[in-house]
Image 1 (cartoon, rainbow, N blue to C red):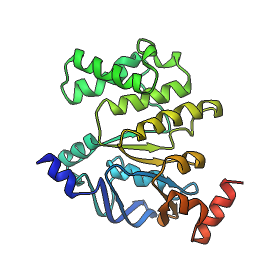
Image 2: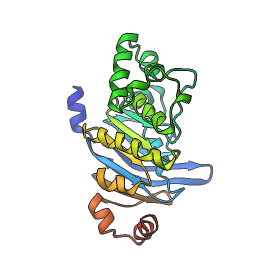
Image 3: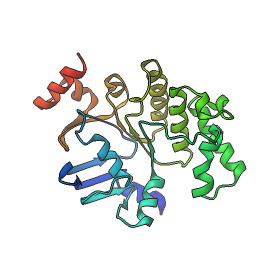
Image 4: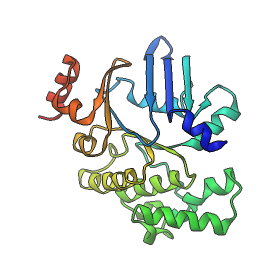
Length: 251
């Protein structure tokens, strides 16, 4: 039954989605489908609605109109549907948001143990597997303050993976990092894409987008202006707004 549900539905489906902050409209009638296994990169100028888009996908921000479904689960305002969707879609933020008083291992096992009722030994084994996946298992007994920013962000990725989501959402995961640490985080994300997991990443790292994305999406003023396969997006942009954006960011 579970397999059949996933087969019938895209990973994410958004139809006519609006989002307001007071009188300011952050998303305007957004229509978007993301297929299972697709790697989508979302880019655009500041304030274009990129982060709002992915925050609406897992109900960190409630949408005001339209519909959103994640792996066939309709996202409503009820707690049950929100929790169901969040089990499908893991989120990595700009800031690491690690618990400073917990070890790296404890940070990673906290959600599986408290939300899923997982036994400690099973949660520990799961966490060590994902810490190894992002090449940081040797730091498991340290505290966040003992790690670099790049290491902390890789822990944040492992922590999200410990809930074993089918979709990973990244909200500008390198924007808070020093330049020399950006590469290690992008490499960790790039390795994850080889596993076939659905990924949606908001980023200004255009080299990463060109290498990794199946499709790129450009937003401006709360609207999807253009979406295209990565090659066409960078080499044959159609809209004047995307051409101007790429000319600025790639110069």
